[in-house]
Image (cartoon, rainbow over all chains, first blue to last red; front, side, top):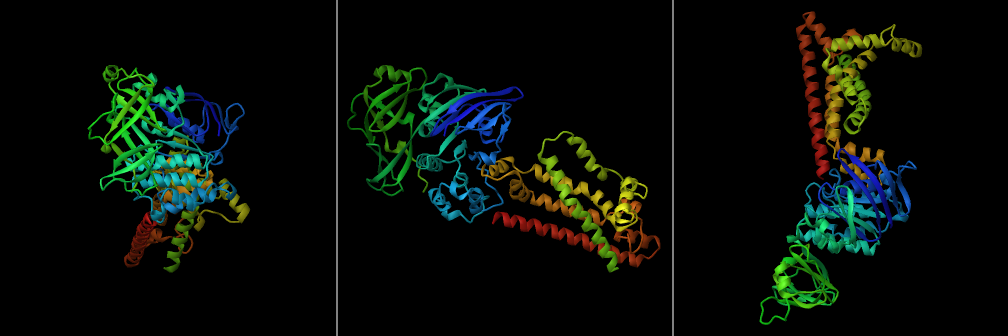
Length: 359
Length: 222
């Protein structure tokens, strides 16, 4: 749903001053700590009142300082998933999920509680208290609880920040699934460029309370306004594929678009969705087809983008519906004379592919 | 003896019941809201804790005495005085025990994570439902502690009570006042009996307190 935000809010020396039109799909909000990301989410959710301005959700005004409109949070139909899940500690998993579900009118419910429980694989822990759940379980419950209230918009504030790799993969996969399957729009706040590129359709970069730049999420890899605080060295390609089968007891194959990738042994069965991650710095680029090489994956790709300005230099490549970004030094790029639309070979060891499987 | 115990319980229970809703409201105001004059309110509600109870009793006498506005109002409505009745005892016990109850509740309310309340709101719960279903259960321990602390203080109240309600056997004499009278009259064995009952009641209240806390935490961890 279209969201229009035009607000100012002052806290001591800090001032949030944002004007943004947020479209459909998953919109990422990216920025350094204390740039105003959470304040922006809180204003949209109705937890904090802007000093001045206007917020409309789906053309409905929920806040207007001029018209003195301020719709209370429970009437905005905006879900909120916090970094630390914020589960109700005095209730079981089931009661946590039922809290919002039972408050939602039947005709508004997008899914049955059972479907949501199944989607996030919570069947086994429904009767447990939430205090002793692991971080990954807590975040799955938090997401399920928000979905159970059938929101029109879902706000996610660093939901994966404190999770291990497999849980991150699982939640990312489910967020994509829900966003498309339920047609649920999301605003996703994160520090991670990898997550943003894997998940967000578009991104808004904010800094010191102001919007700096907006556009396709891949801009995060080649925009100077974010370069000084992004940890490019840890950038990883997060990809979703389908298990193709096992080659032997140590390796499996995964299909991503038209590409078949050899990976370490996957525990998921054939045909199941799996999320994997490949560090951009683990990918080797060759101009000619390598021969007699131990690496299991050699992909012929074409370069769609080169970011010359930063170190490392990111080379964005595409083949058969699979987009991969490799991180090279500037020297390698110039020595190889790489240019956009060149055809090159990406060399990826099977062990450089990290499965983000839940079980 | 039974009448004495019943009257003491009646005074303490009524005082506690009057205090609970007020203490929860004031606890919420101070613990959760950004209101103006918070410091003044906090000072005012804690004043009976800092004042000698006899002084509190004297202030109450000014408020509810025969010629005082509240005293006259009571005579107009009920045709009876407040001073030197069990109602005055209950008022004295209520005022003196209020700070203990409310302070425990304030601390409990301040300890509730606001993101939990915000989550409840974003899941569709209004402010009242959020308060009843989230804030209150999460304050459970502090609430129980505050109520029972208030109750034990009310049942032991002496100084303010003797000023505003007197020490009339069968009418306003509660256990502490009776113990005082017995000791004054040299009836040590009767005083000892009452001291024993008083100690027993204190122990039982503390046991109930622990039981409620344990029961609450068992329920929570499921």
